[in-house]
Image 1: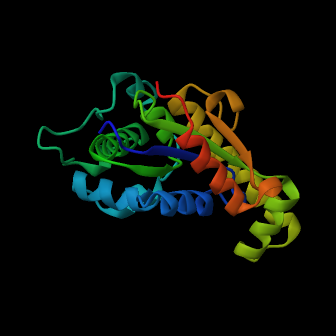
Image 2: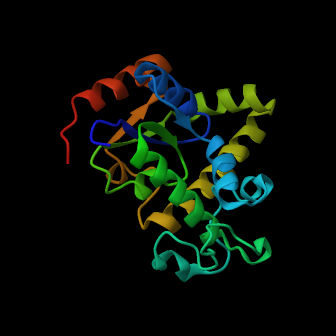
Length: 211
């Protein structure tokens, strides 16, 4: 749709990226797509949601070259439903989810969180890609509070999450996760706060130059 609003939000854990995405979506009166994408993809594919949840934002361990074959998985049936979940690779699941993301964006507006959505929607003329970061002490405090961890445990939790997200994003996009060159905007919530960060995203979207 020519007048649709398409925003993608990549985020560091503990940065408040999901909260910012929800605030932005609320300001525009549109849907935010995060974990609910798994349920939508499961419904579209006929697979159990648990299959997607177990591999959410995890890169493929096999089938490295399936990503060069486009956005349809190698075992995608003509009916649109996978018949043999045991043969699914991470690439197949990424392809399924990517098809759903593209379909939603073609029909209307949305704020898409993670899942390399900025790459999947790179050709959409309405796209604004955002990455949300924060200073490490801020992130540690947030993770300690949310996950009930010690400072040392929170640091390890963050390091592991960053590594996994970077591996997934870099593998599927051929870009670098968290690098300013990979996105239109990078914003630091520990400098601006969540509300102001959301305000900035909205303002930048309204003033962006269309492709």
